[in-house]
Length: 113
Length: 117
Image (tube, rainbow over all chains, first blue to last red; front, top):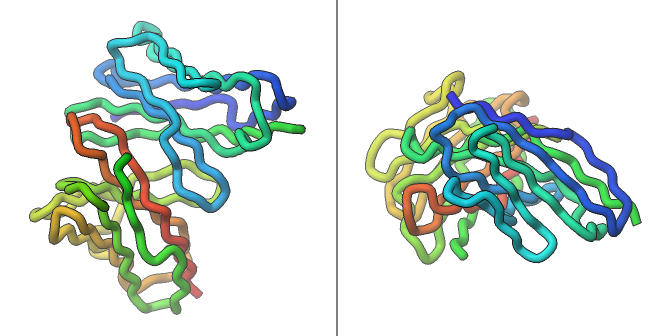
């Protein structure tokens, strides 16, 4: 089955700096890659996603890049703010095979004021 | 966007009792819903796929007789934790895909924190 590795597991940045989280996946058939933000005790919320037919997608301070050849994708947060502090999960979707997402292990991001 | 509602948000029960958790898709129909379990500071672990009108598909290692799933309508799936024990204490979250293509975005319910005493 699919395996998703996420790094780093924790990330501490100064407010205003950028944060980058990287994920790799194993199933070359995967074609959809969402990112979720989860605040303590709350549900994961979809913040951005990318499909395999594009290499990059941006939404304000958040961007995601995808390298299908290398089977890795990354989340970039620019001009970080304290409210960006949360746990971020990447995921991959192989599409057909049961339509199930496989999640990475998560990255705990702390933005220091 | 699509909204998934989950109830209750918290439940405390005694060992040996059963607990039912409801997951509803609001304003859209979901033929498939997914149930996840999350331990503290850990990732989301898929337990089972709930299929409307048919049996749920369980992931390897998940006891189907322990975690009963029923998806009786296009907007409601339920997870019943039977004969609960303290090790069943966890955060349970349901999810459903918004209407669209087969890999449309997945949205989560607000989760249920189960504590078994």
